[in-house]
Length: 237
Image (cartoon, rainbow, N blue to C red; front, side, top):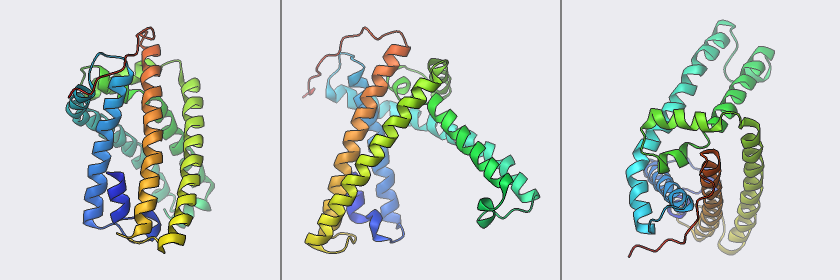
């Protein structure tokens, strides 16, 4: 799905996202979410086939999505009073942020809050995949599991993000240059866009796979189930 999205609307083309591109991006994001939950289901070690894991992930995806939307809404509500402070202080929301100490402090607070919530919600996907709970219970359970482990989880997430970003940038730059040399500028529905899209989708899939498996194993450790045996699933066909 990401390859199709990259082919229709490549990031480096500089063109605005059309309605079709937006729908493709939404569809690919939902499919990627299902894939992540399915991988977690398999990595946790439950005795299920690939087909059963995908079916389970498809059923759990709307609940996980709702939990993610609730977290996003909560963060958005926190932004409202901070924006109100900037408005009352008559600080422009565009150029004024870089020039005002107050705006800089508020921005740092927002970033710190986003990182804190992100780390505490790091295990929401394993919880959504493994436990039969609703969106509120998923948030509560992830908060409970990560309690007392913030700094270790933060260090893990930081190292992973840095490594993934460096890898994706390097692969994107290398294949982007190769595609331009072979097929010309990266434009929608072009050969160069296809090469870049496939390369980026491959790397993103590898990164997602590694992260999903690591989150599943971290979940087992923090839930006190680290001794579970991992089995090789059948295809379910």
